[in-house]
Image (cartoon, rainbow, N blue to C red; front, side):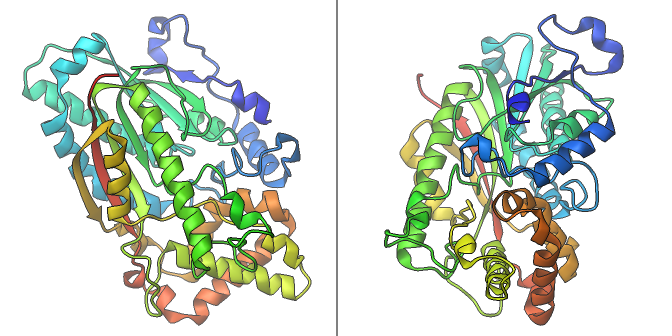
Length: 413
């Protein structure tokens, strides 16, 4: 399965009536039946993926399809990020996008990429916001430019691209291409992008820090699954890995984005690393999920060694830390940076809704390590623990933040 996705290049036309205008290099292999998409989801959740010989890469795609536990049905939290960022993206494109400069790099084509698109449920509205803002700017400035838009949808190799391409908006104004692979490295040709976008994805690491999995290391994370509440050595290992990964992401995008091109990032983060007994963040919830795994180990449902060898490959940065990483990179100027409060958190008002939201995000990763047999019990235990702690049931106690950053590609390449 991984090999077939790795070789996949899916392209879709602007509309079915424009097939005859599609360039010859664009393949028409973009849609498979809903049953095939469902089969792919089941296969991903039941396969151990041992043959890949990679402990994390490509194994943490969101749940595919549109079933009960799918990302499409359980990503209202992430959709809130798109909604709150909409007026900011529109304003920044209006004031910061230099149509004349970008036209000189590609006279007829405008290329956009979404890094971390999942199955498209929240990606499609974001792309529509971007393209509409570009067209309004062209109209307002009375430019004669008429672009053909091409959008690259990127996510991990195991992402359900079948569902994404089967769900493409029929009246879209762009050609669509699937680009499978980890976004921390290069994915596209040099100077091929005019606008890069990523939402709710840059909290994922390229891999779990090796030190936290090493039983001989001071950073070995025994009995826990994340850095929340762990010793300083564990936190430092995560922080260093994030710095390395985001630097790699920025360097890769610096090669792909043309000079003067823009990049809009919506980064899941926390306001502080300090722990509170009355509020919570996404890392806090991951710690609760880890405690459920330990409870199951103590009851003999799985081995403690199995829990000790598992860690979530995610890091939630604070604003000043992210700003420092970007400024050290020197490839982009920070045009705007601000903290957003995600209204999507108010869509998760019950313990079961929060459990379904996390299950859609983490199930594939958990199944790869623990197998599919414990998933129902694990998330039932998680929901029960949330019910026992009343502060988890009030969305206003959820203090995770979103950092909006608009970057412009600067300097010579």
